[in-house]
Image (tube, rainbow, N blue to C red; front, side, top):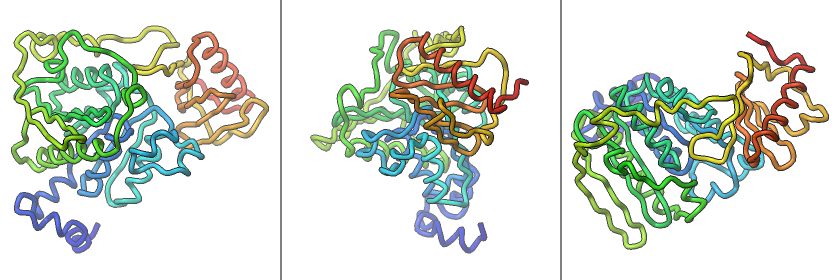
Amino acid sequence: MELTSFIERYSRQIMLKEVGVKGQVKLFKSRVAVIGCGATGTALAEFLARAGVGFIRVVDRDIIELSNLHRTHLFRELDVLENLPKAYACAKRLHEINSSINVEYVVDSVSADNIEKLIDDVDLVIDGSDNIETRLLINEACIILNKPWIMMGVERWYGMTKFIDVSKGACYQCLVGRRYRGRENVCEVLGVSNAIVSLVTSIASTLALKYLLELPVEEDLFIVDALDLTIRKIKLNRNPECSACVKKEFVFLNKKESGRIRYACGSNMIEVLPEKILKIDFSRLRETDILKHIKVFDNKVAYIKVGDVDMMLLDNGKALIKNIKDFSKAEELYNNILKELNKLSAIHYL
């Protein structure tokens, strides 16, 4: 971007004494990873894109559903009809908002196998997930890599957020303790107001920008009540017996899944891995008796619908299968898809 355009675009932000031209350049050189492209993740990603953060990586394994639209700013009805992957749609919108920044999307589940690779090259990690297990995994990876991150969570009319830097204070494990209540996506179980999403992400984006601008950042836990319109700040001290930041017992990071078929972390989605290392050339796909409903995105990932079952098939052969609970049925479906791809000479074994 030319200097004059750069100054004009961010002029109202540059006017702030805490930002200025130097601060704006800092933002443009900053790198952020957003884990989860739901309501909180996409909202914060939009804040950062509009603020001029130069690199944003968005990660999500799911497709957009109609029930997402009431609280997720970046998604549209057409995205639902087109069965767009959340990460793909989020990246596309962010690039439309700010074409001068670099936006990278990853359609995949976050696990102990890939979390460190996803966040190793960024300055700040944003939690846009919907379950405690993923947050605990992010927490452990950030401790190992010495990365700061911002936790967010919403349910009903309530939400919370916290900037976490384990070199200075308490980690997420200190907050939830050893005994936490693992459960499904709280938005599906309890419901959620779209107002609380905006309130929590506004606070979280402020924390993110202050950190990237090298300003002092509050490390309190912010608890927001949208119904009573109150915000509380709670000081958290490091737990001297914390299994993660003190004892360095990385339970979730060391929980490497075995086997080709497994449940994705924090969901009822099934992952199926290929038996051999392979690469899929989606450009060779065409409609067949089995591949009746298929859409390909950037030759990186394909959405396949078989009856009531939704599948995201990655170019490395990994499949994320939704609306199916039986491992044997998931494997049968996966094998049938691969047989069809073989007939089209779309699979190359490495």
